[in-house]
Each structure stands twice: as structure tokens, then as C-alpha cells.
Length: 216
Image 1 (tube, rainbow, N blue to C red):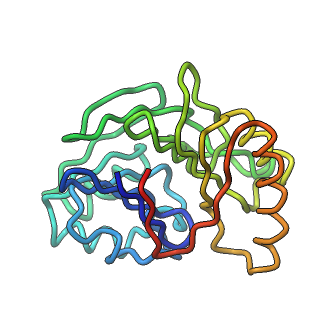
Image 2: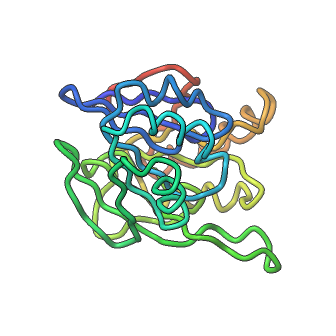
């Protein structure tokens, strides 16, 4: 299975000529990520994860793409691209998408501030392998994750929480997401800590540049 990282939280997963894309947002190369996609999964409605204008425009021209997302996103797609097949998802579900097996977890965005209402956020696990938490640090239960996508920097997180998330999931390998707002200095600080702590608990953290691919 081939995983390609795009800017911030967008990833593209390819397996046996099928393509699944997660979270093409405003910082991401939306059209490139979605090219030839069969399935689009969106964790939540924030624009850095769902660029409504560009994604809906693409879907209107490519109605063959099937969309799975929380209600706030699903409703926008239904209105903007009515010919697209859209499924509303919540946490604690399991379903098949072609040759991909998907499980969902969580259901709520991480707390930004007590005076800011939280929104729906659904984390996705693909093929018992790749776990994309969106904007949450929900630890998937009852299974062993192989590949963890780690939100390493966000207005709602601190490094202690990020490290605890990595060592709680205990995936074999971890790659960064949600890193579109930091420069090389910030990456160095965050990633050195995550690398060191991950190694203590059996997780190999690897930096992955936007546009680069790995086999997982």
C-alpha cells in the first residue's frame, strides 16, 4: 500500500489500482491529491482539512468519487455536488470501500478553548494499518496500529499531549501530519522529542516531506 503525504493533513493511499484520499484542505495540493481518486474521506469541516470550494468543484466534475464524512461536510457536498454519492459517518463504524477496510473512532474535535464549541471529528483507520485521527488524539481501542499519522502542531495541542498520543498508540511507525503552520525550526524541536519518546515505546518516527511517498 502506497501512502503519499501532501501539505498539512492531506494524504493519498493507493492499493491495487484503487485510490483513497483523506483531508484535502486549504493548505494542500487538492487537485493533485484527488486525481483519479475513488474515495474521499474527511475527518471534519475545518477548512485546513476540507477546502470546500476546491473540493466541491472537483467533485462536481468527477461525480464518480464517493465521499465519507461527518454531517457538516457531507451536507455541504450534497448541496454543491448533488450527483456525488455521499455517506455520513460517525465514530464506532466499520465498512468496506472497494478493497479498503475502514474503521472509525472518536467523534469530537479536540478542545481548542472552553468558550469555543467543539465540532464533529471522525478518525479513520484504513486496513488495520494507517490511522488518521484528524484533529483529535483519540487512541483506537482493541487493535494494534501499524502506521500512525501524528498531528505534530496545532492551536489545540501541546507537545506533552502529542507525545502521550504516540506512546499510547504504540504504532510500528509514525509520520507527521498537521504541520503546515510550522517552519524547519519548529519541526526540529517537535520531531526530535517525538522521535526520542517514540523509540522508548517501540515507535519509529520518520519525517515525511510533502509530495513524498512510502510503502506501508
